[in-house]
Amino acid sequence: MKWTGFALVAVATACAPAAAPNKPVASSISAPHASLELYRTYTFGLSDQPKAGYVVTPRSLEVQRRLRPAVVEVLQEHGYVENDTKAELIVKLAAGTGEIPNPAAERAVPGKLARGFIGIHIYDAQAGTEVWQGSAFAEIEPEKIDDGLLKMGVNHMLADFPVSNAAPIAKLP
Image 1 (cartoon, rainbow, N blue to C red):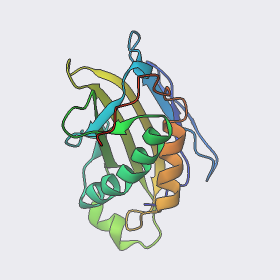
Image 2 (image 1 turned 45 degrees about the vertical axis):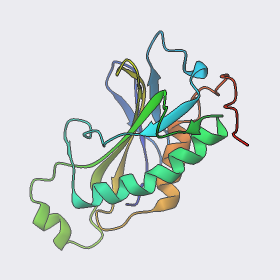
Image 3 (image 1 turned 180 degrees about the vertical axis):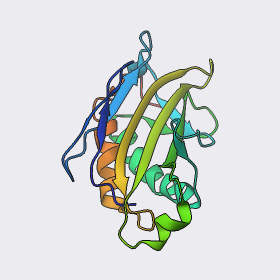
């Protein structure tokens, strides 16, 4: 997917204007009373559905697969540790393409752009409640995935994600 721009989603309001090409702007929001810095571990859960107006395509699953290492990298930089057995947070990824009136015509025209969405949703594992979410929207080339721009989008979404202040996990000998 070629992410040529992102749109900032205002909290509880409409979307802001799209950013200039290759100048990603992303949004994120935390639950009002979530103290994310107190969490330490995370795991990945099943995919979430994309935002309304976007559909999952066969490409969406590949985009999610490519998003995962970028998310892991940023969370580790923020002091979080992946732990599939005792995770405090569950990370769910979402990706989709905007509803296109005639998908066959979209693929028949080389270089034609579509609308794309990527999202990261983070849940408290014990309570099951969403504590953080980030999303980005862009014009994409439906047949190409640009890993560099996907990583840039993830970095922008998670830029303000709190650094973990939880005590480090003791390592076994």
